[in-house]
Length: 166
Figure 1 (spheres, rainbow, N blue to C red):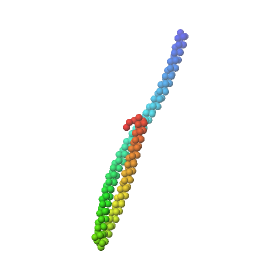
Figure 2: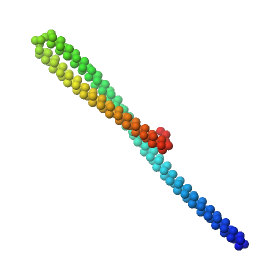
Figure 3: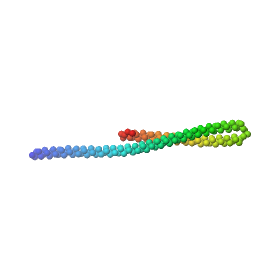
Figure 4: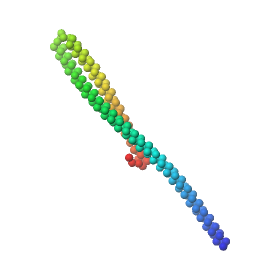
């Protein structure tokens, strides 16, 4: 019987060793699983932040596009007004030249027309400056849209690196 007791004791010791090894492996596996779970949660939070940022940037891009379109319309209006004023100025210059030729002695009317032409020249120059300013604003808005598109592409790339699709 003592031989059986030793054998049982030996088997029990061996089973305890195997059990201890399995428990150690199980503990390591659980710690690894917890670490992966934390990484997944962190990645999901980051993905959520990126999606919110993307939505925000899309909203800003839409606003910038609307502003850009409005500025283009305004620039076209100013350009049309400018063209009309240039046409009117040219007509008035022609009228002035005709009147100067017809009535050298009627200098009063001629002076009035010259003053009107100078005033129109001033208006044309003002409209030209306005038009140039609007063109600069349009360019600035287009640059902003391009930046937003680049940021969006970067966000998509980061999301793709995290294994997400848009």
